[in-house]
Structures are given as C-alpha cells and as structure tokens.
Image (tube, rainbow, N blue to C red; front, top):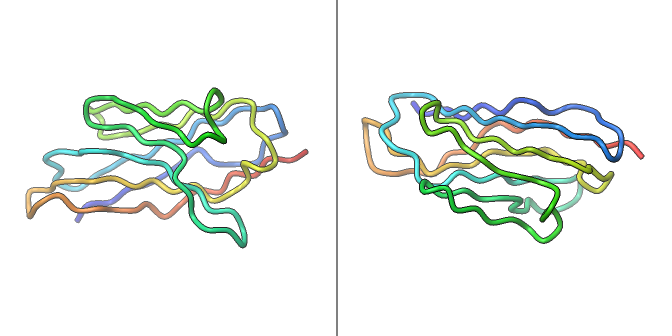
Length: 120
C-alpha cells in the first residue's frame, strides 16, 4: 500500500518561511510527477507546484518567485520551500503523486494534508 505523508506545516507570520515535506512509502518502484496542491476554506483545491521525474518544475502564478518545489528521488520525497509567505497562502497543503508500486501500474495518490497558517 503506497502512502504519502506530509509534514512541516504550522503557524508563521507574514513574510516568514516554511518547508513542507512529502514522503512516499510502500514498495515503490517509480514515481513520475509529484505535486503540491492547497485548499483554503470555502475554496476549491488548486495546484501550487509540480515537479516531474526529470526535475522539470511548474508553478501557479500566485507563488512564482516565492515557492520552490524539489525532490529527492533516493528518498522518494518531495519538498516545498515557501518564502515570503502571505496571509492568502493560508490553506491545507496536499501532496499528490503518480506512483508505480510492485503490485500494479502507475496510480495517483494523495496525502492527508498539512495545515499552513500565515498571520498578518
């Protein structure tokens, strides 16, 4: 059973930084893309950043220049470095990944989410 576990969320003042981690586990053969999404109260879940297996990245316009996505393939882990945080970045942040395990083809998995709260 593949699991994605996020960590690193918390409460920070505007202008501060946080680093989120997403660790994938469970008989993993390969991971294609890894994404970070977020969902604020009353809003739809939105894509924040994507990193491919080859390391190509893409960002939502709202976070370009402030957030950086990276990954450590040896650890099956993705990171989201968030700098210059704003109150509007407050949301639950979710990890999403396209994973192939020993037991089947590539499938999409979600983590349980980690809360990020930015105070003004």
